[in-house]
Image (cartoon, rainbow, N blue to C red):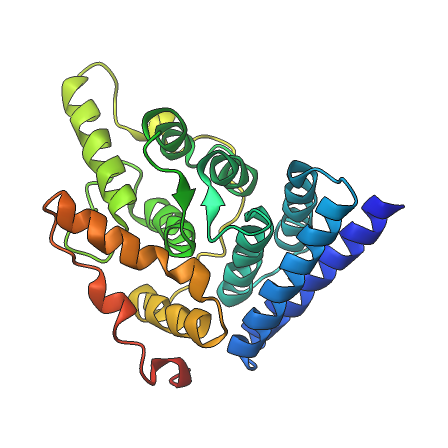
Length: 260
């Protein structure tokens, strides 16, 4: 019975927030309400001795039902909203982000085999990463879309663009691996793109502009604890002598949220 109640509550969060994203109707307020409600559900589940992994499983089921139905037609904005909801339920009860192992598990639930090399890299080679921020979570979806459109060989990837450092480092490692094994296989997509590819609602539009607007919504909606990972990543980039290319994405948040 408790599982059914939790599923109903989680379904409601997904449905309400994705509708707001699809209609672009007061998305900031909808995000704040969805985030608060998700925390309440996670807290109630914990108080009822429901394991956090069970909560994530239910959230992934809700995501799949909303985005992968046989007759499902979902806009890019709505898909982004559903994907953001998975993050909300993947967070620990008091966590700012998602623990690395749970992020990997959630990504596999969302992407299937599409980003197998990425999830394996984060899981096995990035023990130094304890938490995945909201920004990195959302940018991973855009990375998957760009791979789907432009190719999993990653020749298109531009390090000067506003990608999270973790994705930069994955691409660096991927390219180094491809160079080391040149000739041993034909292309990188065989073990990166995978064969099971759930839809990503590719859509169109300027993803860089959408990202700035998404950050504005997150900040204005009281989602600061998930966006604060940007500051930590800025500091880390400086420590490893990377140009802190992404600072502007957290600074140009004035009136861009109202441009939609």
